[in-house]
Image 1 (cartoon, rainbow, N blue to C red):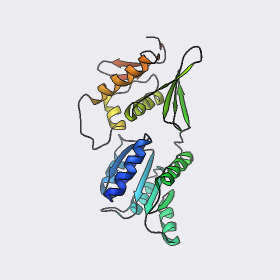
Image 2: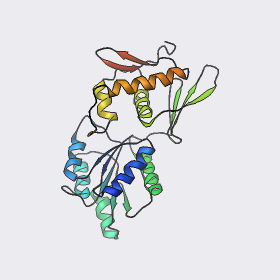
Image 3: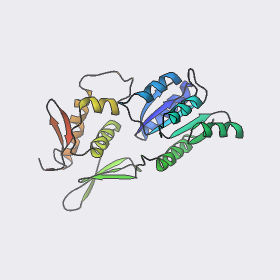
Amino acid sequence: MRVLLVEDEPDLGTAIKRTLTQQKYLIDWVVDGNDAWAYLENSWTQYTLAIFDWMLPGISGLELCKQLRYHKNPLPVLMLTAKDSMEDKVAGLDAGADDYLVKPFGMAELLARLRALQRRSPQFQPQELTVGNLTLDYGNNIVVSQNAGGNKQEISLTNKEFQLLEYFMKHPNQIITTEQLRNQLWEVNAEPISNVVAAQIRLLRRKLVNNGCGNMIETLHGMGYRLNLTDESE
C-alpha cells in the first residue's frame, strides 16, 4: 500500500512516516504542494491513499484536493489541519477530501482513519490476500504458508519483502519488469541502486524456499520476474 504524504512540518512528517512504515505502508513524503502534484501526475506510481496538510508551500492541500477531483481522480484523501471550525471542515470536505483530522492528533487515530478510508475506497483491500499456498494477513502484518497436509507456518519478512510479495501476489503469473517494481515499491526520491530489486528478490526467494514454498519467483532474463503458480515444486 503506497501513501503520498504531503506535510511541511518536519517533526510531524517524520513521526507519520515512521508510524506508517512500521505498518508496512510505502511512503512518499514531500513538503511542497507543487511537488505533490508532480507525484500525482506521474503515471508510473499508483497510490492507495493520500494525506494532505492544509497549509503548504506552493499549492495548498485544499487546492490539491480540488485538482484531484477536477481530473476525476478518486484517490482517498485525509486532510490534516489545525483549522477546526465547522466552516473549515465543510470547505475541506467540499474541496474533495474524504476525511478530516485536526491537529494535534494521536497516531492510533490516524491509522484508524486510514483503515476506514481504505474500506470505503474503490481499491478496497480485504484483511487477507491468498494466492497459492501463501496468505498475507494485513491485520497482523504476517505471511503464512500452508503445506499439502494443511499445516501452517508463519514466514518472517522485512517490510520491503512483504511489499514485494504483495505485489507479486496481486499479479500472479504475470511478467513484471524491474522498472515496474522499482517505480511502485521504492520511494520516488530514493537513492538509485542498480541491483536493489534483484537483491531484495533474492532475499525473498530464499525465505520462501527455506519455508517449503518452492522457487515460486522466476527470473526471466531480459524480461523481468514472475510469480509462477503453475508448478510450485520447481
